[in-house]
Image 1 (spheres, rainbow, N blue to C red):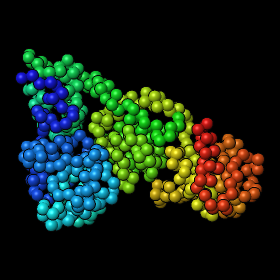
Image 2: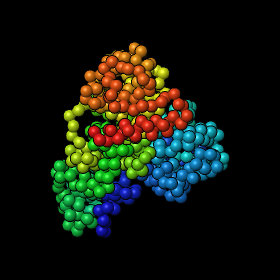
Image 3: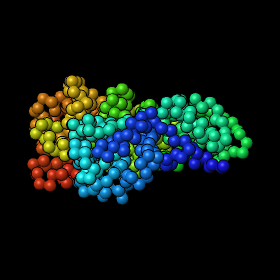
Length: 490
């Protein structure tokens, strides 16, 4: 019988000929068919979470026994919300659970708890949740005593024996023998989807598109294989990667997202804790720390093409590339070429911040408004409240000295009599005064105070902070637009 290669080594949907049971297949089956027991399936992308659940249902429970829903599909959301409110009874699989609004997650977690306690499927739905790593632990965080009431399973990558069996099943259908199958396991590290993709690509490199009438051995080199797979994925992911790297508002010097993604491409897994990543990669820690609190989430919310493929939880600092094909693509693309195509300018400066704000405590409200507005336009601003967690246990004295003297492209100073008289603002001025000659200091004049070292004819912005009416809009119109215009012209 003739089989198309795409049906044998399948990269979309559930494989018919090359499906391999994970080691805990039977444990999941038992929990899945238990009518009163909620089930949580977690694991990184490509480990076969969705495929395993669909296969168990198909082989053992009947394809119509569960209603399959995904948080990625807008058409499914109304039904998921109804489930979370207790309005629906039945058997449901909720995929991509981690993408749901936290309030919906908590409602479903509470429903799961009650359903497990009552153990009555005539009153409560049977719910199977599928999500990325740690979705189970995050649910337990929401509802502390849920763990003992659920079947929580993590699907791990396949072992070498299972991967070889997957390949051999495909070889039989296509009447081929793939050389050096052990190298494929080393390349995929047990990732089911990637194994399918690589085997399919090896077939295409050897002109095999259907089952062969005469048995044939297929050869390849890892270098050529990686290049070919990356080329196949180029049209799918190049735009997504560029949009992510360029940030919400592109500037040729604004490359922290580029640095973050490149660093993630060098990691063994596609799911990372950004705090840990920053701590273990000091060369990019500044870039990661500058975007992990809020800017990264703002980027994903503002660009649907990025939100589709990247997941970030700003509370747990967990970042995930949910598509294994995309993760493979970024591992082997040419990052130098990508940097050029994104339009980033090569520069020798070592600035960690676009702006640092120097202010007296009496003007904290104004400084905070300005800092949030600058950050909303995807600029890196040092405002002390934003970075308190990063500098715990460290001396502000030494950090402020570095920030205001060397690490900020521009210094915004809110100048008034409080700034003139107070100790900390005076210390900050001593740090940034030498940069006045470089035109890096932008005064915001709040009154007529005279400052030694800052010539009164230094061009700045006059702003009346005593007028509280419509303050946010006045900051935007009178200060923010001028600051951003200057940065764009740098």
